[in-house]
Image (cartoon, rainbow, N blue to C red; front, top):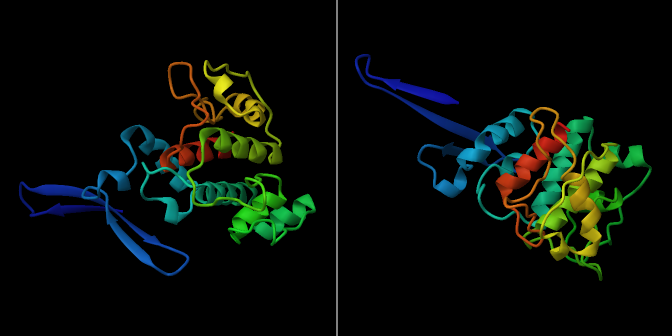
Amino acid sequence: FTAVFSNGGNFTDTRKFRLTKYDTGVIRFTDFAAAAPALSPSAWAKGEIDAAISLSVVPDRLLTDFTANITRSDFCTLMMHMLRTRQKTDNAGLLREKGVSINRDAFKDTKSEDVLVANALGILNGRGGGIFDPNSSITREEAATMLTNVANLLGIKAGEVQSFADVDRASSWALTPIGFISSVKDKTTGGAVMGGVGGGKFNPKGAYTREQAVLTAVRLFRA
C-alpha cells in the first residue's frame, strides 16, 4: 500500500509499504524505501515482478532477497505455485489430472510436498541415489529444464529456436530444454520465457537469482 504524509502545507512525502502474511501466520511489514537493496528487486525487474504479484504467480515467502541465488527447492516451489495458479487447482488436482501419484520415498533429503508432486508429474529429477539437493543454488540449465517440463505439461509449443555461443558448455540433457524454453514467448511482452545473458551466451552452469526466476515464472504463465 502507499502512504502519503502531509503537514497540510508545503510538505508531502510518499512511501510504499507491504504487509505479507505467510502460511505459518507470521506477518512481515516491509518499508521498501528503507529496505536493504537485496530485499527489493532490481529496477529492470520491478515491472514484471509487480505483474507476477498481481497475477498471484509467486508465493509470498519468495518476495524478498530478490538478488540472492534461488535454491533448487525454492525454484520448484515457485514453479508449482505458478502451475496451480494457472490451472486453478491444487496439487491433488494436478496429480489427478495426469493420473499419477507421489512417491514419498523418492528422495532421502527432502519430503517437500511440492518437490514430490513435481517429481511425480515429471517436472524434476534428483541428482541420483535418492538425492534432490534442495538447498543448492539451481543452475540456469536446470532451471531451463524444469521450465520446459512445466511448459510441456501445459501443452505449450516451441517457437523459433535461438542459438547461443556457449551452448557447448551445457550438459547434454539440457541442450533440448535450452533450445525449447528460449523459443517460447510471453504473449504479453513478446520476450522469451528464458533468454540469454547477453553477448549471445546462455551461461548454462551459472546460478539463477530469485528475481530472474520470478520473471521466467510470470512469462511462462503468460505464454
